[in-house]
Image (cartoon, rainbow, N blue to C red; front, side, top):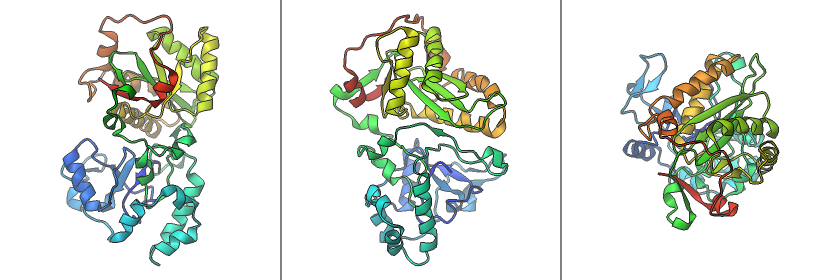
Length: 377
């Protein structure tokens, strides 16, 4: 499983056959009810946080459709009582917690909890270098391959992301990053804010994989997202080498023109190599890709749509998801976006903006870009 399971001492957290539900992050009133019932102190769920079905009463579960889902008024009510334990765990420095031997954690738990907590700790140590973002489908083992967004391990050391450290209390952490969803709202200094005001100014770049290998040999998906229009470009790749990534970026620029810059959370050394390839292929002197930790959070909704699209492709067409990918991306770009209430195609392609055929200059240094918060207007 590649998402955070957040209920205290959840006995079903490692069971891949159990249904998990995300927190209602976009319904503050409903979210507050969930958190009150969980009784965690000083904790906020991220977009990867989930609760299993066993925390909900049967009256809140809708089993009438093709998939099991929650009713509109569903609120989790079934939790293990923890008294002061949850409060203590929530305030513990997780980096020091990871460095403690298993016996330390076992001494903090009751005898009944020891058998479940110790394996979870061992599993956390073995999987903390993965960044899985999807649930493993039950059934066919060929479809259970994990996939991830390739990210930078350095994010684990950044103290400005407190929500990462509260992501998981009962099973192993298999996601390396979970930036603060409210990062944009919390930055009030205008000197450290960059506004995205037009289509194709600032883009986000990600590489997802490895996915189940298709008959054509594709195992990765390169995604490029326009933060303003919500337009998505997604390309299947056989490898995630910097040269392959650069080649597809060149093709995208040839069609849509040059953006101001492209943000990416790929590892720093990979970003540097991609920029070097782009300079050679485009015959430019500027670095088009800029490493930025907010790549995935500047447009959360579109990221969720892409994640869901990839998961559906793997589940429905494991051996030929690359064949169905263009139709899925077409559907994303020609449907009304829940944030803008407009179709990405209309915003990007129907406003009369001409593609810019040469690199675009910036009024600030790259160091300021990395330190700034992006806000989409």
